[in-house]
Amino acid sequence: MPNRLGVSAICLACALVACDKDKLKGPEAEVHKTTVKVDLPAVPAFDLPAAPADGSRAVKELRVKGKKLLDTDVTVHGFVTWVYDCKTAIRKPDESDKDLQARIDEDPTLCERPKFYIGDTAQTPPEKSLWVVDVPRPYNTLEVKRIKKKDRVDPDRCEPDEKDKSKSVCPPYKIGDEVTVTGSFKQASPHSERNSDGLLVYQKMKNMTENYESPPPKELPPGAPGAPGAPGAPGAGSGAAGKPGGAPTKPSPEDVVKQKKAG
Image (cartoon, rainbow, N blue to C red; front, side, top):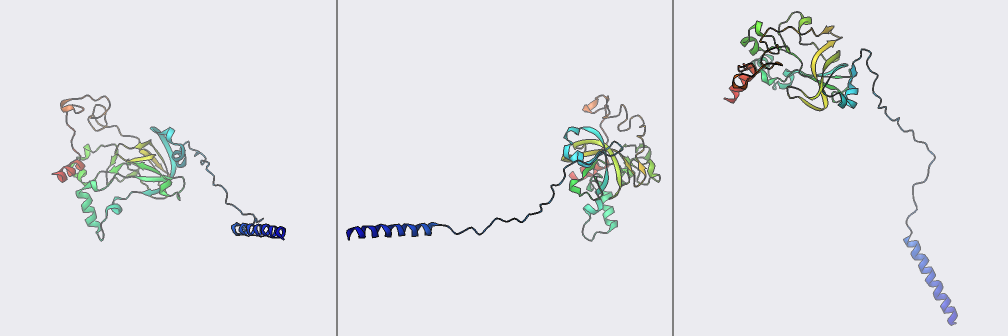
C-alpha cells in the first residue's frame, strides 16, 4: 500500500507539472507561410539624363553632382517652370491694377529682382528646378525720372519701352519656354539670393520658344558703371573718403526710397 501511494503521488505531481506547462504555452501562430508571390514596384532609376547635344548641362546634373561646378560658368538647357511676378506677390486684397502700379512706382523696393526656375522638362516641379537669379530688368519709374536716357547704361537694365526686343538685355520668358541660360553657378548671388543646392547667376540667355538671344554687351562710355576706370571697375584706384575713383557714388532711386523710410 505505501508503495502505491508513493507512485500515485508521483503521477499526480507529473500531471500537475504537465498542466502547468500547458498553461505556460503561448497561443499558436496565426500567420502561416504562403506561396503567393508579391509583385514589388521597380526600383526607380537614378541615372542622369543624357547631356544636351548643344554641349550645355542638364538641370538634374547640377542638382545631383553640381558641387564640383560651383563658382564656374555653365550653360544650362531647360524649360521655364516658374516665374517671379512682383504684382502677384505683393498685391493686396481687392487692390486695383492702378493702385498697385502706383505703389510700385512710388517704392520700387517692394519688388524683388527678376528670377525664374528652369527644369529638364516643362513638367518639372519647382522644388526640383534650378533657380536663375539676378536677371536683367527694365528701369523703373523713379530711375526713368531721375536718370537721363543717355546716362541709363547699366548692363543689367533695359529701357521699359524698348520696341526692338532683340536689342534688349532684358530677356522675354514665360512658363513653358525652352531656354539655355549661361551664368555663374554659385550658392549665393551678388544681390544676396542664397541656395545651398546652387543657383545660376544670370549672364545671358537664348529663348528658343521666343526666338530671342541676348545681344552682345554694349561698349560702355568712360565713367559709366562697369566701364574701365569707373568706380568699382577693376583697376580703379581709391580716392577721397576711401571711395573707388575718388568720389562718392551716387545713390540709386532705391537708396533714396530707403533713406526716406529711415528718416
